[in-house]
Length: 267
Image (cartoon, rainbow, N blue to C red; front, side):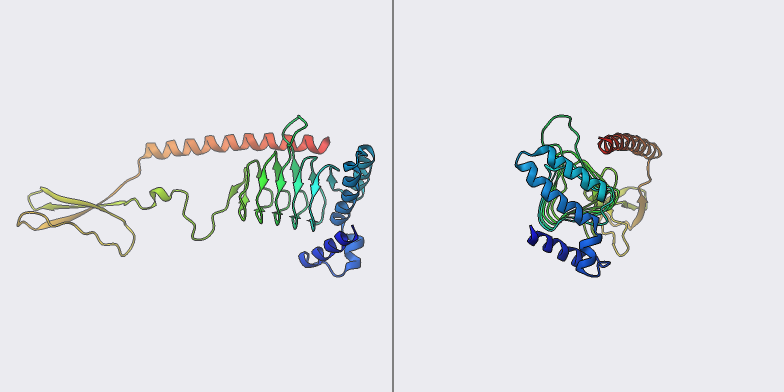
């Protein structure tokens, strides 16, 4: 146990630039105090002393404002930064080298005694006020942005943000509508002087692109006519209606999640 305390203090020194020395960390970091209380409570819980474990967890919550159920599993070098408002549910599993900021919630979404809380694999970072609900898994070295609400699995080395949380596209990644990215938006049409069309080709409108046509049959000189596709107002209105409907659904989901979190905090 003392080896674990030394590791936790060293992690705080390396992670928190505000940490000045070991004595300061040992005496004034409630996030670490909550983890140390939990290790005692978890050991008692594992030995079947559930009531005593809950009493110690309750005392820890009163002193640190961090609530961790004694049955939750927490790995080595877990650092809860600031600590205030963190809630970790009964069936939550936290790996090694996990970093949680204040206000994080690892909540459940099932009334049955089953695996109903999140699993955080090694190296995960949760931003302030991040809320994770249900039996989901956040992969190794993933990052959850501040204020995000996560209800689905997060892949390793992935950053998610938003409500509900979605992966963040990194620079150089293929855009979501990449299937349409290569579609041309300019039509090049060649006609004879008498108006007869002799060939067409669609080209991109990017600067530097040149429209090339296959040779027209006949001796009459050809004329190039550029035609750009115009957006359909009806399609634009339909897209706007779909986006507003999706926003309403997300707001309803967020309100339901907020109610779940409030019930968790009151329980």
